[in-house]
Image (cartoon, rainbow, N blue to C red; front, side, top):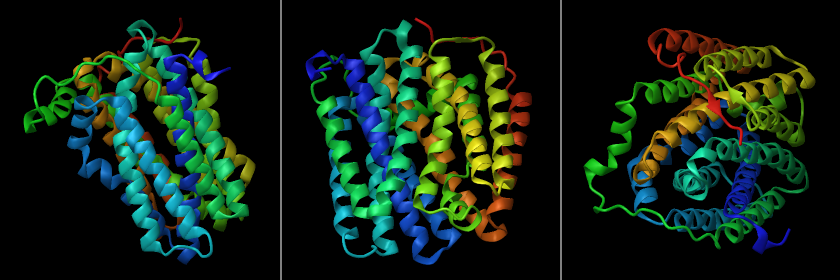
Length: 399
């Protein structure tokens, strides 16, 4: 297929694949490099916290930027910065392993670029498709993300066996591809009618706080993944428990996305009746799978448990994303998406810090099992205190 025949949504899809694949490749390399320096669980905890800090420190500015500036250009600027950072990592890794402080600096800068890019792209999607097609487009976009999260870590682990610099050069090339795919998009959009002020920057928070269905859905995902996520400990599990190298780590990081991809493909063709109830089933399933992973000492069982956890998580991702986009007016989507991204970042990156600290105290296996139990507890509490959530109707993803 030649470039001129690509539709705006296909260009968006290709951009998502390239940027997420590049970020995942770098995550594998950075996690392995950091853990290889001193083999300390707390270093992995710091990786998660440093990745999360930009989303917290810049949240209000991020959302306002996505609503005030052209979203396409904002995303492209972030991709260009990420490309330069990947080249810098390749340069630092060409002859010797970079020091911990150098790696942490790059992690913070990459996290900052992603913090601005993700809400801008999320808010851009509804401009490219009709509202009736938006749930299906979200499912297809989620499938793109899972394809990238499968291929990125596996390719990153394979290239790392050659050299860390090979990972970062490949990532830089993918960012260039994303820029090429996104640059021709031309779509009219609503610009902010008033200059940015403090009360407009807080509008996304107020909007979600006033709608219990959104608040409950976002916070359920936040706390369940915050407690149950084990991504930060995968280098530790691969090295100390499963006795696998960088390629094994790449496979472990890819496994959740493999399960999520299968579920997202199914969701793109079917309707979820009683979606709210399915969300609670998915969160509980995520907790059970996390417990199985924590108890496993075999690569095959660990991969299966992670794949099942990823599939469970994808159900809540599609429901949450559709709700956020469909119930938010266009002029506020950037700010609401920034809050949504903060919730996701909290559950993922801050969850990595939490699991790293717990592993430093108790060890990897108890930390993962306790996290899975925590996810089950959260599902039970939210089922009781947010009854409107399990009454939420179906989510249509068919044409």
